[in-house]
Image (cartoon, rainbow, N blue to C red; front, side, top):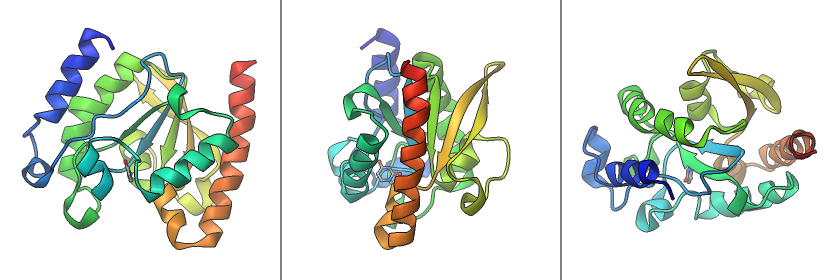
Length: 191
Ligand code: URA
């Protein structure tokens, strides 16, 4: 881990810039190699993530592991993080000011350090935070967009949040189909 990342992680773990720090057990900076070519961005830590300080380590994480396998990706080769790094109370959606603070101070810095070739945008909160355009998940899932960052456009693949799939077989199927499509993109990237 580079010095810049260690320092950023330390700052995230001790952050008090928004109200979410008050009730967290652990902030969740993210996980994965700095050399990752693919970065996945979810919404916010849930209960398990808050307890362990690790992203996607509960039920949604187990489904994400299955999806990564479909895409031909190993968890150890991708960088996984969230838009906000602290668990919102009762898993409510993060508020606009919380998103703004966390993206400006942390997610953008993570993008600068990791410089991914492809961002997998998991759900509406991540889409709202990363894309400068409205997405309608029902229409835009499984499609590529661009994340504008530091004067360049990073490829972004938009899909549903894995947690949404835990409540419905239809979304589960759509996610599996999206990750099969993602497998083609990954294969081309690695070729
Ligand atoms: N949901 C998220 O968005 N992120 C996690 O880390 C876990 C659940």
